[in-house]
Length: 387
Image (cartoon, rainbow, N blue to C red; front, side):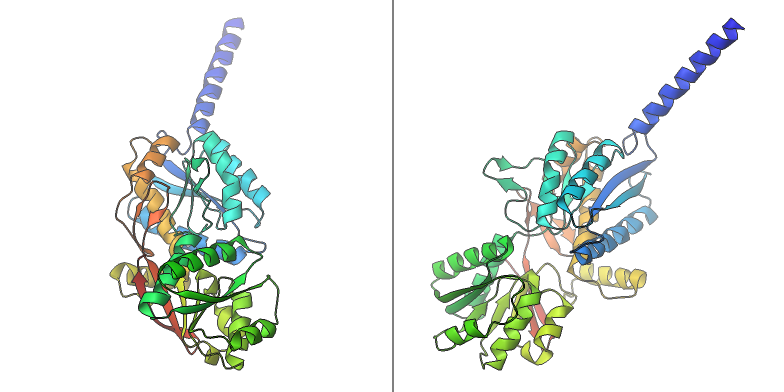
């Protein structure tokens, strides 16, 4: 009996050790799936950004898996809702890396929540990649490049610079008024780079005015600028206030072109401004359904078939994000975080729905802006422009 008991104990110990080894390798070389974490704002204040991003991610992964996956392995998404909270995003990033054993984490969508996950990524040597975190300091700060952080969207400085060049070169405007959301880093960053580029290009900033998030009456600002000599307005802010500014500006007879950035990208802009007010309005974005590039049109067809609706920019960014990371996994020497980081750093000429791009030394994409013109409240034309 003693011999039987000892043998049983040995067998049980071996089985337990084997089970632990299998659990610890999930998502790695010894697993039949490759796990990728999804850490997005699926509820809370910015849930629409997260929900749209995840729709794009899931469409891309479905397409990849149906085509055979990666080296015979299927991609498994491990998805969590960070509730639009930075602390929750950090907790989930740690869980995905240490418990779920993912090889990469996609998201969050917003800059603040994404930045909160980066120390966890560096500690665990697992890349975190965002499709939409645009703040300048997301991937690099005064200490240098954040080694395990990447994004596939351009940053706020790039948009501000791009729209200044567009005003000067494409619209031949030289006298600008800036009406800025001073309560957000987004608005301040866009304004700073627009002003710097516009003046460097020979333009004049006639006036700079400010508002804060939640303001609804902009008539005092508009009255103060109405008598000045200007030929373009730049509004670095979000659609909630921008729609009202445009509506009130047109009501006062201010009919010069109005420029914005990707914060304009919402159907609510037209609801607030009114379709009649949205003429000679231009904004930078990551994507437009008007783009006739076959890559874009194929994506639109796939998306509409899957979701029965038109895709937006966050859908497109999520789709590109998943494809970008899987492309890195295919090129990585090994299926681990450090090898994947090295592969992502070496990405060149990635053909995305939101444009072709190469990852630069700061882990940002080198890609063109899409500038969209609105006419009677709908997208009338789009063009890709480079700084």
